[in-house]
Structure formats: structure tokens, C-alpha cells
Length: 383
Image 1: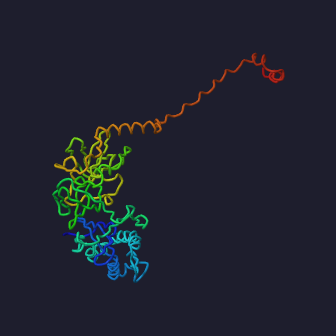
Image 2 (image 1 turned 90 degrees about the vertical axis):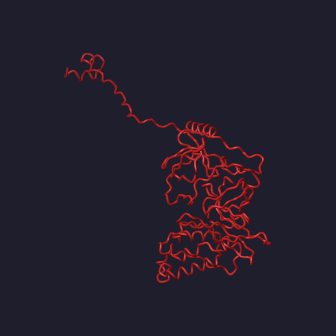
Image 3 (image 1 turned 45 degrees about the horizontal axis):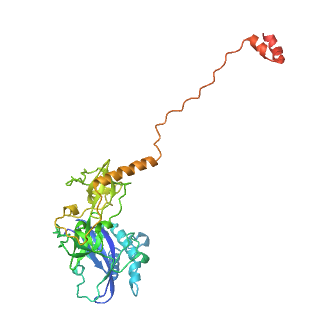
């Protein structure tokens, strides 16, 4: 499979399971170096046993010989009774532990013990069946990653969506769906690819093929931000539809509307158009921090290109046309230009103040005529 290293491990949350008895498992999205992404489930007791074995394998780095040499992060031991509050409260520490672990030297972060622990097991592929009397309750990790108990809003936070058309997968990491299929969304990626599960299947599905069961999906999109966010194109794209925009690698643009289907509205000078978000990177962001598209997956298809789409919603909120985006963008920029202080013109050296003209020296007769008697007496010897 070529899983030579793990790029990132994201803690998605945890599940409360009832078979064979009540217990809790944590959900991890493991991103491998070959760009594949897998969801695995581990109990905290398993994670702690993994941690203890890792310390035995690297006693110097674990601080067993010299505490000052310790680089392997600490992990709190399991409690005598691990309930839901304990499962919630340790999420922050668990996320920090994994982040620190993957940043260690390669002899630790790429050791077989770590790689094998996070590989997919047969149990990871077994989803609850409809015959179970009580299905697992899913609690997702808050977006800020802190994992505070007050921030958990469960159970069953996974959103349920319906496929509006049949989608045939084009890579092993994707999941095929048939029109009318109901899936649970585990992760919504900004790229427009959503990680879904349905019965015994899991994989990535284009967001454009899904709609929520309770309301039109366009209502979920955020409002446009005509102030714009600076981004850089990390991959060139040639427009296929009239409302798209072509960019070359390295082009600087502004994103004015982030849509959930992965096709963002961008602005370059006075032009606007749709562009695949997975080919964009925030300006000033290091390449290692930028999200990378999955192997074998390109830009997701747009909703307007899907044939035979069958929605259960009679009316959906219409999206703005590119003409509307351009008009609103120009209007916003003009208004911002009026409100912002005028740019200072290049400074010119200040003009020198004109010096008063020096009057000519008056003649001796004029001085004697206008001066006082005292001055006359003093000037008499000099004249």
C-alpha cells in the first residue's frame, strides 16, 4: 500500500458504543504520505498501551535514563471508570499528544510500531448494522480542537444527506452512491470532497452530489465576503464553463465567496468566476500547512454539470450569477475607496517663506530730519 509515513492524524471525535457492552472509541482520520486517508477507531486503553510500548522501545527519548532528555509527550493514564465526561475532556490532550508525536524524529514518528497501530484493521470497516437494538452515538470534536466538554453537542452530530444523482467512484478512496442513497457526513473538506459513510461503506463523495434532507443545500453556504481574502493558485486550471476563471500557477487572486461544493468565487482585478478551491493556497501560508488534494482526486464536479439530478426540494435558493458578483464587487470596492482616507501624494519640499525686502539705507539728511534730538546730537560728530 506504500504507507511509509503518516502526514497527519486528525481526531474527529468519539463514539459511544453499546455492543458487546457500553464503551467509547475515538475516531481518527489518518492521512498517509501517499495521500490516502483512512478513518480508524481506537479505545483509549489501546492508545495508552501503545504509548507504554513506545516508551519501552525508546527509553532515552522517554526520559527513563535522564528526565531532561525526554521528548516523547506525556499521556494521562486511563481512569478507573471512563465515562462520557472523561472521553470528552481528554480530547484536547489526545490531539496535542498526536501532534507532538508526529513531529518527533523519524526513528520514532515512522517506526513500525506507530505505523502499524494506525493502519486500518478489519474492525474499522465494520459499521453498525440495522439489526442492532441501539446504534452508536457519535460526538464530533469541536472545530477549535480544544475538546472542552461544554463545547460537545451530541449525540449523533453526523449530518445526514441524500444523493441527488448516481456517482461512480474514480479512485479507491472514493465511495459510489446511487440517486436516493442516504449517507452520514463525517468530514466536510473545503475542497468539495466530503467523507461519508453508509452502512458498510466509507469514502469521499463530491459535495455537489449531496443535499440535506431538511432544507436546500444552498442555504448552508456562507455569505459572500466582497472584501476578499488573498490566495495563490498552486495549480493552473483552464476554464471549461463560461462562469469559470482560468488561472496559472502562482497567480494571486482574492476569494470573495467560499462555497461548500469546492468551487469558490474568486476575483482577479475586475473579473470574477468559479475556481476549484483545492488548487488554491492562502497567501503567506507555508506549503507544508496547505491542504493537499487526495491522490487520484481532482476538482469535484459542479452541480450545474450533473445530469439527471433529482432533488427532493421543490425550490432552492438561487445562487448569484457572475454578473451579480461583479456588480456587487465593484460597488463594494468603490464604497471602500470613498470611505478610506485619500492616498497622500508624493511629498514636495515645503516652499521657503519669502524674506521681507531690506529697505535701502536712508540718507543722512533724512535721518537727521526724522530722528530725535538725542540721536541728532550723537550723529552730529559723524556727519
